[in-house]
Image (cartoon, rainbow, N blue to C red):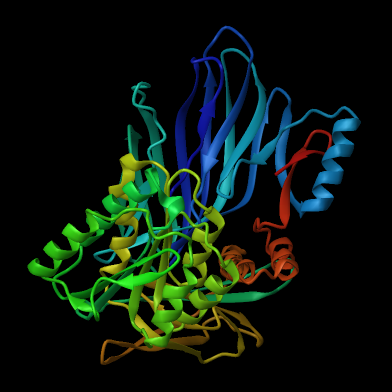
Length: 507
């Protein structure tokens, strides 16, 4: 996804006039610099802020802006140290440029005073992930323009790295730009400060045929009453109508107890769709408590494997520890996806289901965009997955991720080199797995050209940080965050006024 910010001001004549995206790709991952041009066209000086929402697969790596209050750039600090330095700066009377976290994915950045009839530039850098469709990268830009604004914003995309592309257009709603996958599958970068070399290798799942098995686990506890159960019924109906004919499926309802709709995984056809759809239409929130761990344990006991397991819930479970452990166990042979229903769902649990389960997460707080949230998942799960994967390199080093139970679409692996890599050296990486009963092997080979930079390092670190956070290993995540300048839950950004070199506030 390509994200940009929404300008907030009391003056309607303060507006976003242009957004330029500079995108450096590594497979289907990228580092993005979103450059915002903001105009105050009113007759008064105005205080302006920006709100920005990223998804669960993205992380901020820095930001900068220039206003009448100063020229600011970000520095990453340990969160507790950031609080101390921000307090000291405020006490000493330095101007404040606040960037604060609204929730786990939304940020609010106070830019301060913008002079009348003047323009400022705000830039934010982040790591993100893009979808794959028909051998193309899909770059989606979410719709941040209110229906009553009737505003069109010029934008441009310049893509470098493993894929190259340039595009100009006008934002008037949600945009989607497809670019060809025409770049190198192996990339190497060297950090000039540490001399650390990291090489990435991206593997593309080219399997078109294979069994697709899907298990829906549906929360019908009392906490789902009202908005939650209505969203569950609607979303499940949408899922059912998008399944392919060669798939098998199962629907599990849970609360204080649980039950299976079918005796076993059932072939998807006209008759089973009709039966499931009719049954789902009568779902109510009448199952009592929220024992999600029980149906997960049942799937483990049944030796469930090679399935996409989709959990639809408001997220408030009775035994979160057991639930997470069972998700971890199932993820060794399956992909698990979390769908949060309702405005008050447990966002942290939903995020962890996707992170730990080698899947994705979707939060559906707005019932009007259910179809969009369903599509985020179905775009991936309708590709046959490659399971039981192993990765090998012809060089020595630390491999990330250490385990790949399955992948669909694309997966990128990284190696921190423990040996000297020479220019033109032949680098080989190979992934092996199974798609159904078929053995699958993909091999990448390249005479390497090591470039200067740390984007590959940061993408590797983000992969490691997400795993450590899901395992509650806060100190290890913090160390990686500080080393590679990737925001995590234990670190914060300080906005530094470059004219005074004083820290002024943090996120």
